[in-house]
Amino acid sequence: MARVAVLGAGIAGLVGAYTLEQAGVEVQVLEARHHPGGMIQTSEAGGYVVEHGPNTIRASTPLLERLIDALGLTAEVVEASDAARNRYVVREGNPVALPTSPPGLLTTRAFSIPGKLRLLLEPFVDPAPAGVEESVATFVRRRLGGEALAYGADPFVAGIFSGVPANLSVQHAFPALYEMEQTHGSLLRAQWARRGQAPADTPRYKVFNFRKGLQQLVDALATAVGPVATDEEVKRIIPANGQWTVHTAQGWEQTPQTYTVDGVLSTLPLPRLSALEASPASEAPVLAHVPHPPVTVVALGYPRRNVAHPLDGFGMLVPKVESDLRILGTIFTSTIFPDRAPDDHVLLTTLVGGARRPALTHESFHAVRELVERDLQHLLGVRGAPVLMHYTEWTTGIPQYTVGYGAVKDALQRLEDAHARFALAGNYRDGISVPDAMASGETAAQRLLQDL
Ligand SMILES: Cc1cc2nc3c(=O)[nH]c(=O)nc-3n(C[C@H](O)[C@H](O)[C@H](O)COP(=O)(O)OP(=O)(O)OC[C@H]3O[C@@H](n4cnc5c(N)ncnc54)[C@H](O)[C@@H]3O)c2cc1C
Image (cartoon, rainbow, N blue to C red; front, side, top):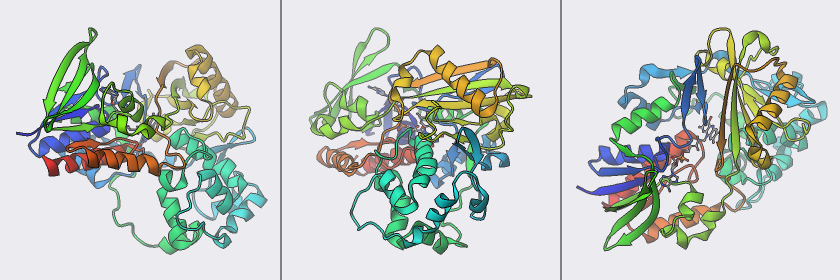
């Protein structure tokens, strides 16, 4: 029976391990932290269910649906409430509802009249020549104008990537937008062309989570793949006589261990992979330079009566131009999933730092809490001390698909081509979302299976 070491037990690693095991491969999963899940972690306290990383999965994929069924999680899926359809963006210090349909664009206060007129000019803007790579900022300003960049793209890029539009590549970070322009010459024309067309795969779940949080998915996968070796840090990956040896340091005492395997599936984040004492990644220095800006997640619970805002939406995002405010945005968690907070209480999850203000993540917990509370008081009319506080600092955050990211993708491909039975997966490959990371784990496992 072939044997494979899966490095990292985030969602990409767990799905990779599951795919290999289902095909009859013996798998050893090695995880540096005390528990599997990587960026996915959920905790429960005082009747609150708190996500430390991702809060929702947007649109299930066939892979996810298959796994949900196979792992017996169907009854555990919780879909977002209807109220979560609204989204707010902050303008002149106030949360303003974004339109939920094209006619709503006429009345929304999120954009000024000149800003709205500029949006309508979009179909008349020439597309960029094929092959020209632009930043998200350049693309959006060119197609939709400066206001759409400031109050649309900027806060969304902060909310999704913890990034800034000037750094990210539209082609790599938002390939669907790039394709719309390339194919139809215009985003509005592309939307128009698609009207009435049923999408090829209608997802079973649109926006969802699980009753006890995303941890349920992780735990079910970890149970299915058998024991995951936790507290075991990979140090070196070395090719040896047609096989691989993986050297680790185990536990508090850093006891050295060696595994000899037929294949390696690495899902280590790029900064960790590049920092190993020995690994094929040393042949691709470009991998060490992908930025992963730090981001801090602050979850605060309040009695409902202490929050003036109706919280009738998914959350609010804060554009950089709203420079008096420090937070990137807040998810109205208990509106999306009412069971996340005890009765008559609400749960608000706020992001701080990212590429916009990385230094804030180095502030003390006290300082971060103070700035979050100050902004929430101003924006949502929050009063009094929170009854729940939870703080997670992600020192290595989300990989930024910056302009020129094609060089990173090429380097990843070259490494796989140059080393037999060595595969790479994770949120740095083909999308940063949980389903994207899962798909990359499955794809990498399937690639290995062809060679085993
Ligand atoms: C704050 C935040 C909010 C997010 N919100 C959403 C959201 O709402 N929806 C969504 O779809 N996505 C969201 N994402 C993105 C998504 O969660 C991640 O992209 C995805 O979970 C990454 O999975 P992964 O397996 O690629 O990497 P990771 O989860 O980072 O897993 C890598 C694993 O490798 C381990 N590791 C590292 N070094 C070593 C070593 N030397 N030896 C052994 N193990 C090692 C790590 O401990 C980790 O467990 C969010 C991310 C963050 C940070």
